[in-house]
Length: 251
Image (tube, rainbow, N blue to C red):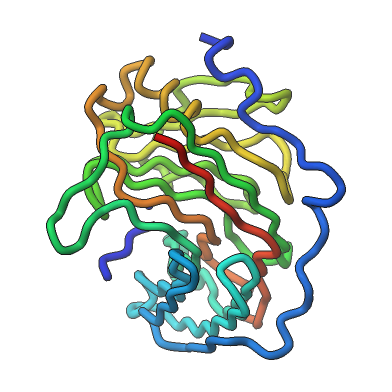
């Protein structure tokens, strides 16, 4: 979500199950390297940023604390509710890698990459309203296009009521619904079932969107994030944890 400081043969094999070694839960983060409750608290680690990102919390009663041992082993404890009834996302704690050059504004074209893939593993509380998702920003950060790839949906709706269901496809043996706004400013892949860990061929999914006309052929890549869009925790503290994350790119 927003931050300021995300033809069947084409998509076959996009979601690839990991082997037993890859699904192991990360060691408990008992002595975190970084802890913050700041709405924009952010920590750099090995080329990635771990971000508390309480981007839309100021008008609501929300608290959130992030603890990180590394970019691939971190958690947040959040308290939020939906007493307003508007269903708004309040926070998006995440790990991300920027491709946008914040000094020059330059971004690489998506087509300059031959391969982009990512692994993830996450644990969620199964209370309230939230989703776990990749958030990919294109043509800027925030940019003209936001592509979300949900791995879990708990009582959430893509982009509130602003997106329409435009396609259903099976990627790598899993069925996904694809949602998009009329201007393709927001696009979401939503799986039929909860996915707690795996490997995604992100470049192939984005190329499929280009082939369908949802993204322009000369689109640039701004950032790739993975985290949790939190609407509500039912008003009580709830924990969201990333146990694994990696990003592999080739050009």
